[in-house]
Length: 300
Length: 295
Image (spheres, chains in turn blue, red):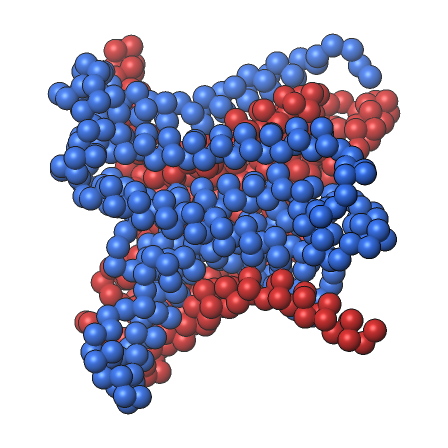
């Protein structure tokens, strides 16, 4: 090997630092500005320091009902996270063998990732609209007239909204599972099988503990992608809005720093989730390192 | 044995089935609906299930009569492609450089992870927030304008910093360079370091090694990153809307405008056109690489 650092290192390091400043600079600016004094505006300089804009958010004054949008996004994010983890791990297990339709599922997932979000969103909206029309027209024929009259729409947070988010999170989950199993040592499972473990025991006691840190990663992706999702939700979320949609609505009308306070708050939630996940992954890895061998400890 | 085989098949289907079901209900069928509805008729308040090419016809209205002057839809797509190209170029150059630094100049695994995390974390936060974060910097009274005025470089604030094409490209690069860094980095760390030593020993300069060894081997990552960035920008309407001050027409924006006017078939026709063009670009790019091998 050549000794010392080449000149290019310092140039590239400077480039990297510039990139990081570019990434974080604007965000840091709005974090600072969200503590703007009551008389302060949308830009620097700071006009005193206060928590006024955060209070405004929670009191619900001025802005749309942020509190309930916040809760809706949180609930949806958690459901999306759970579904993404379960379905991705299950499908990831299936993909370790070739099966009829595996190619189809794989390319569908890739397509779902790269088809422009607005097209998917529009499609889901159309699907539900046509479905609504069918219900309104034909539920009466089946003897459910009041049902047909009262029906407004099947669209909602946990129907079309959940589906729209899953078309975005599941491909990521599946790709992470591929990455995991490409690096997975199959001999461990064979050993478990040779020792008489059932497939479920093999999964529960051998495979799952090994892949668990990455599975938490999938959960992290599932939650944060849903928490910040906008384009796919735009047409498919139904009558109520998620937090990013409210935020986008605010960008055109905003004149006060309360939007920054909202930004700071949502980012804080993202960071909380990220660091909780990273911490959990670290803890698990440390535990794995400690309990590398569980020889003689028995299985069940 | 036959029974065993059957049951293992069943397990596989139980494992993969739910995901397939979600994709069928929320992706494949909706796409079919988009194509179907694009051939429907409509009036002010509802869509009418009768076959017509009105959605397409209206979209391309004036394109033949006005030729060689460009009609709205062609101009819009040219604008979208231009934005797409600029964003692709910047994300590629920045993403490649960052990935190169992380893959070849950072020797310690821990530092590699820490620095990658630093690049990843903003990706996990809201895009809208990351867009509005430019307002205090680029606005008329923003940091950039104030600094330039105080330094006597300009005497009145620059208008094109915010709510302009410049702002759109800047924000898109800011948001999506990450999508270039990850696949390129992923390709680069798989390059056998001995190849680079060999190139060096054979007398190649740094640039020659970069051009003849590293770039060809990082090609799959470059292609995957490009597919990501290009498809995102082609369909984008949120960033272009917010950063363009709702004034810039783009492919995704047309669909949104039609939707807001409740002209679903017209929106669907535009979606089909967008889908077709995006698909063409991907096919061209994907010919360069086998995606599945690269995971």
